[in-house]
Image 1 (cartoon, rainbow, N blue to C red):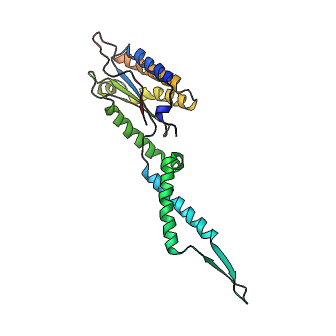
Image 2 (tube, helix red, strand yellow):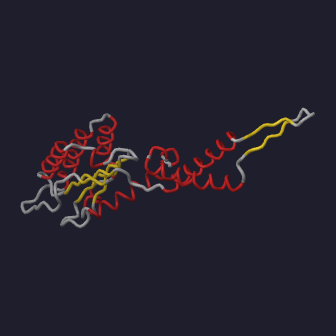
Image 3 (tube, rainbow, N blue to C red):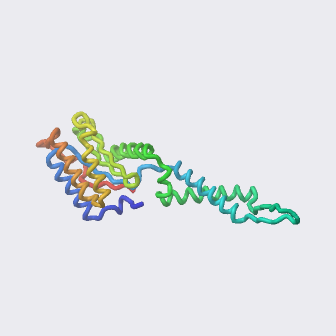
Length: 226
């Protein structure tokens, strides 16, 4: 999984930050793009992979240590295995720990065990955290906007402060989300994030034109979370 800190070059960051400045030059709104590597911890999916990994190891050990012997003077055969109960418990325990660690270091292994609903909930939760973390809530006119992109979940959220939510609804931000998603899919994230920022600026300028005494309350910066 690629980290957010490695996703953009320094040139890309500069281009995005210049786009923020241009967009905010026409509105009193504050636009903050945030890119995060992953939104959720997904411990349960790691545990599930750990259980399946341990059972797989137990099955391999059981089958590979079987011995088939013929009973003298009879057609029957006898199947024995070297995997006794203590060994089975040890294999399950070690396999579970190893599987959970593997899923932690290689997130793709746990992806199949994470539901779409769980991902959406984690992205929504983390986006709200980022909204407060980067002081987007609490600007002078309550006109801060968060463009939140979660790389692992392939998910985008746009959150606005109170004044913005009174004028614009989530449907108004759908085109912004679609631009970012399109950029991620087409491997042109910088270009499409710039377009998303420009569109956000246009939407804000319609309802929140820049005032004569406007101040840039939040830094024009691409925020990255690993």
